Image (cartoon, rainbow, N blue to C red; front, side, top):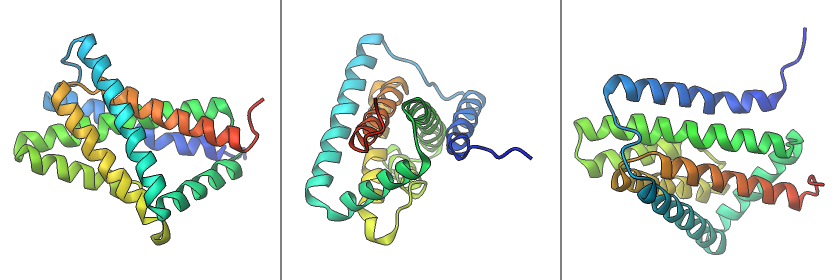
Amino acid sequence: MRRVDIKILLALPGIAMMLIGYIGSRLLGIPLLDTSPEIALFASLTAFCLAMFLSSTFEQYIPSFRLAGGQLEGIIWQLNLTPVWAFALSLTSGIGEELFFRGLLLGLGIKFLPIWLALILQAIIFAAFHPAPRAAWGYTLWTGCIGMLFGIITIVSNSLIPTMLAHYLFNHLNFDAALERMGSKP
C-alpha cells in the first residue's frame, strides 16, 4: 500500500472549506464578488497591511505569539515543506478559509443576526479552527482578531477577493520567510 504524503493531508481542509464555502454561498445566494477592481485592490492592500501590522504588534508584545511562530516553524521543518508546497498550502488555506468563514459563515450570519454578532461569531469560530497549545495562546487570539478584521473588510468591500488575496499573500510570505530562515530555499 502506498503512503500518502502528509502535505496532501494538510491541503485537504483548505480544499474542503473551498468547496463547502463556495457551494453553500451559492445555494444561499450570498454574494461573493460584488465590487469594482479598484475597491478590491485597495481593500486587499489594506487587509494585508493591517494583518502584517497586527502580526508585528503581537510578535513584539505577546511572547506566546512568538512561541507559536517557533512551533509552526518546527512543524514546517519536520514536514520538509518545499516552496511549491508552501505555495499550495497558502493558496488552498487562503481561498478556502475565506470562502468558508467570510463567505459562508459570515454571509449566513448576516442573513439571520445583527452584523456585529455575525462578525464576532465568525471570528470566534475562525480562531477555534486555529488552536494552539496553552503556552501559545497568543496565536489563537491573533487569529480571532484577524478573523474580525477580515470580516469587516469583506463587509465594507462587499467582496471576498480582498481577504482571499491578503490571506494568501500573508500565509505565503510567512511560509517563505520560515523556509528561508531554515535554509530550505536555494
